[in-house]
Length: 270
Image 1 (cartoon, rainbow, N blue to C red):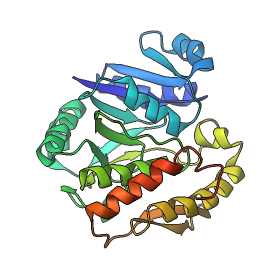
Image 2: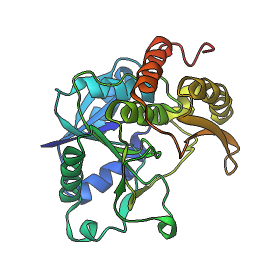
Image 3: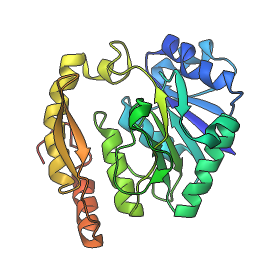
Image 4: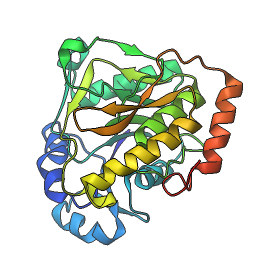
């Protein structure tokens, strides 16, 4: 069985019109919505047939960490954002399978490659896509991810760049970062209401935090992640270094440094 986990905050209408509509159209159940505890009644009222769980600490990073600890070890979960309009693919198998059959095939590949995490292409321009999957460090995004709950789940408390940090941690733990390059989602970035922008108090505040936090993360994950500028939104971003070579000693040291700083990344210098 595959469990569907949807982190959401203050976006009931958006969730209803996008992700929940998509899941319903594809006859997908076993859905749990994870929202701030103060919003449980609101979400339950809107989605009475769906399980709603209150996450005790607000923020997408804390919520995803809560989700990873909510399910038993070995559980197959799909974390999907609350603003997904469509899931698309150039893969031939995607066109002949139901959506859940396709995801089941993805989990089979995860088992074959002995990894606990997988993601998908982070952009929606099919012209630049290739079919198949890769195992080198390439950003997958957090909007749609597959996970098999490990014995000691990763702990990512930050809210901006939590997906990059999760990608990097899984790569360092599994020595692979599985990305299905021909499948992607259609969503809406920088939505002005709810979600991460609401958490930081506005778009400007989010951009300011991105600049500060990006530098701190690049120092911890030295050689693996580096800062860059997203010219479309004029905001600091991160990217994986394409020629990073995995070394176990380096991986252990990076993980140790991260563990020492994870609780204060958004508030202190590294």
